[in-house]
Structure formats: structure tokens, C-alpha cells
Image (cartoon, rainbow, N blue to C red; front, side):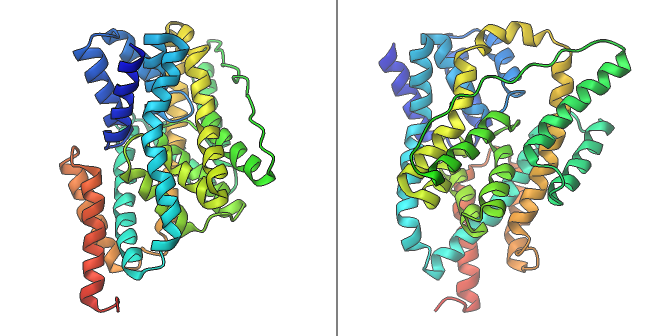
Length: 374
């Protein structure tokens, strides 16, 4: 069973393009519908509750499934299999990035893909919004969190947790019922000798432990820390890392491997990847499997999700804006962005990988025709 599970998750990690929801749907199709290894209701309930957890959703679902099938050993197998192929790809990209990024043709190609990534992230917000599109409180929190985040009034992680708690408290007052709040899970720590490595690990650990939403929700926090606060990553390199994360199979949060490598080589890549994934792995292998039934019965869960999701949407929207603020005046941006949005909206199952490749090719071709490339 162990070898079969390892082969399955390695294959999924190597071929699972399309983002977290595509990965989760594939796991549901294979492990629940085809193999009948996990009960339908159990899987769907766990997935619903995992969406309320901090950290990357697809990774946590994989770890949950592995733990459900083979205990802690299965969780390790699932985590390793899903992440390892994309981790290797990111290391290779990191090694050659500085050598190939100096060529103007490569820069134009990457910029075109970056424009398409903006469309991918914005259309990804649809999955956050669909359940709350008619909820006035959701939109008020979204606008407020966007304002507070872009003006650096409150840190992004505090915004997401704070608004979640705010809605729970608000609903509690309105319903005149007492509510309970989960205490934070204990935090483990991994020691590295280099101070920069420790900081990279701590930052990614905080992202994995505190940032709610899908993997996309991590980018505002990481951009704020690595690009704006620490100035260890230029914005252009951060944007390229996000693009590479969209291109590779597996969870989009594998971008953190690229960020870590660019900041501190292989040690940085390991610190960033482990820092991000240790908290959700801990949750999925300790208290979460035992608490799913209890959590599903708590009325405040839906209120917390509403508040935290609205904050995620606001922060993500402003992150996309900041990532492309220097490009909004370029007609090339709109030439690629608008068709990409239309394609993703009308054909949501379109291959993300093919869309990115096409966007890069179009931008390169435009610049070749315009005569900007020697």
C-alpha cells in the first residue's frame, strides 16, 4: 500500500497542473470515486473544514488523505510525493534563472506570462466570492481590508484572522449566544545556523500557520515581508516566482521554494519550503482528524470563514494591483490581460500551463514586431 500511495502522489505532484482546486478534484475522483478508499461524506466534510484552516489547501487535503489511509506514514508519503517533483523543478529554475533572465527575449517572455498570472489570480478570486456575492458584510470587509492592507495600517495576517474573529463576535452579539474560539495550535521550530535562513523559515512558518485561504492567499503576506519589509527580493523576481509557481504542477505555494533559493540558495529553498509546510502538516496529522466532527457542528465556523475570506479577497486584489502597478499604463499589459480574463471566465477548464506559454509567446512576438529586441 505504501508504494502504491507514493507512486500515486508522485504522479499527481508531477502532472497535477491547474491549481489547488484541480488537484483536490483529482484526489476526490481517484481516492473517493474510483478507488472508494475514502467515504464521500468524510472527504467533502474534511475539505470544507480545511478551507477554514491556514495554509495551502491542496497540500493539506493530500496530507489528510494520506493520514486517513496509512496514518502518519501515509501523511509523510502524501506530503513528499505531492511536493517533491515541483520542488525539484523550482530548484532547477532557480539555478538557471540568473543566467537566462539577463536576455531581453526571456524577460519579455516572462513578463507576458506575468500579465496572464494577474488574470489567473483575479479569476481565482471567483472561488472565494461565489458563496458570498450577495452578502453586504462580506463586501464591506473586503473593501476595508483592501484599504488597510495597501496603506500598511494593519499587517495582512492580523487582518485575515482579525476580521474572522470580528464576524464571529458580531454574529454572537446579534444572536445573543455565546461562542467559542479555537486556541492557536502549538508552534514547533526548526533551527538553522544562519540568521537569514532563520528569518526566511520564520516568515514562511508564519504564513503557513496564520494565513487563511488557498495558496494564493499567501502571496500578499510573502510580498509584504520579502519584497517591501526586508527588501530581499526585487518585485520583478517575486512576480517571476509567482509565475513559475503557476506553471509547475502541484500546489502554487511551491513558489516559496523559488523565493528561498533566490534569497539564500539551497538552504533558503529548504527553509522556505519546510517553514511553509510544517504547520499545515502538523494540523493534518494531530488534532484535525479527531476534530472534524466537532468542528463541523460549530455554528461560528461559517462566520469565521466569511470574515477571513473577505479579508483574503481584499488583500489579494491589492497584491495583484501592486504586482502590476508599473505595467498598467502599458497597452501590452491589456492586450494580454483582457483576453486571458475572457478565456478563464468562459473556459474555466483551460490549461493554465498552455495559457501562460501562449501569453509569453504573444508578448515576445509583439516586442519583436515592434523592434525592441536587437
